[in-house]
Amino acid sequence: MTILEQYAQLKVEAKTIAAKLKELEPQVLDKVLEVDGEKVSTSYGTFSATARKIWKYSEELTKKESDVKEMLKLKKREEELKEIATLEAVRSTLRFQATKN
Image (cartoon, rainbow, N blue to C red; front, side):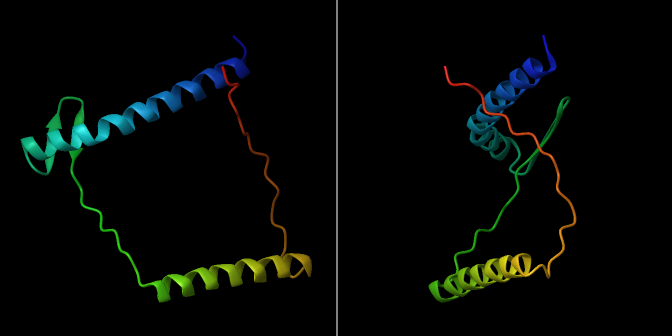
């Protein structure tokens, strides 16, 4: 098996595993809450239930945030075009797309 085949196979497996973990997570969380309510220690690790706050802000603030992000994006592009911003690096990255069966 070539290095490319190994990589492709592992990427597909990782995607399958990630989907299965996402599917199991609510069930595992329910089990932790049922057993202890906060934490369950086992011989293969500790499972903890954590709280995460999710905030919904006013439309006014959300609009301002969006406007500021857009303004910064435009300013950054402007600096790039005027060569005020300096290019620090160009990195090679790997992108893999599995063939569809």
